[in-house]
Length: 455
Image (cartoon, rainbow, N blue to C red; front, side):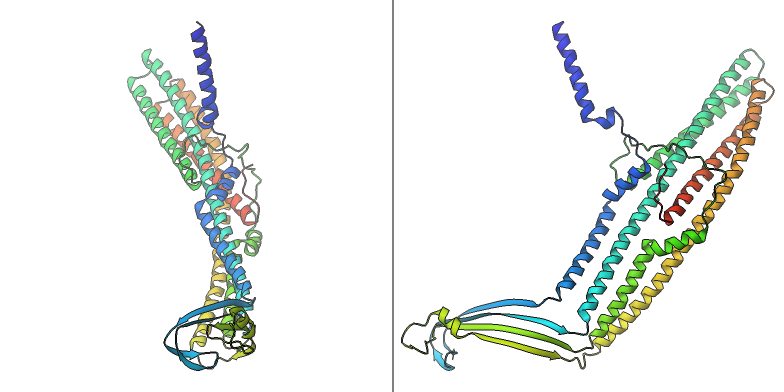
């Protein structure tokens, strides 16, 4: 008995331990809200991480271009082992013996003027960096919209699944009632077979809608880059009903904000500014270059002799001190003819500038068309939703009346099935209109700078 007691305690411990290690499978995973999905994707999506690396590379290029304004400093050193006939740099006579010598020094140069090329390169790289940041923001916006659509598709399919379940339950109840009527002889056997075939059709429809729901969950988990669907579930909003007096935001108001703030336009504007600076860089190549160069140099040789005491050894350290040489030079380079390279560079920069101007206009056009289509879809969905409410109400009344007649044995299953199918179709159309309006209205708000939320 004592052994059984200890075994029971050990089993409880294992159960408790497994619940700690496997909270997802034992306790069930906490449902994800739309905000949870969006935040997770923004933090973990691999494509976004890659685009952020591109932006970091552009940031590094900007930093490097700023460093190019600083002097270029370098050191050098050389040590030689010579033999045979060669020149002795101490007295510039030919000698024929083995000896060692060398030199070392440092030099620096800095541009004083080069047609403002480096200044324009810095500005060009700055706008290029800002353009890559805008590309990251654009990718994030697209990710947010895709996840929102997938999330609302799940909500739509879940409600559709609930309707299919309710219809299957209703038809199964009719099968039971019809069976009793057939048993007492008040209804023919054919009515029972007909209503059973309708029940089979409803079970098939439930399976089809269930598969659609699973597929929509798969679509969302793939957008989130989760390994598998598992027990992943979304959090249902507390309220998804639409106010009948709802109004769609005017198109001009939505576009007015989006064209000034959306990353597609910002990125195109930064690209245009980048190409303007790139043209300035190309034109700067025509300018003379003025730069200053400084040099400090010294040498030593095994053949060296101290001028004050030629008979004594002449240490390398003393030679380096005595042989020091400094130079400061101002230099001027004037491009006269560069085989048309500069002119061709300017021509290509002008073409790139014109393309950037066209790209900006095109991005504005694409944005306007997208908002225009979304606005039209929102208006149409709201109108369909209001109409569908009336259709569902009328077809619900027709179905209830048909069901009452069927229960009383005053109507055949065919007419009942027609009323049922009409109601299901109306409910599906209502759901579709509802979620299409919710999605498009959320997207219009998003274009106005309002984060997408289902709460």
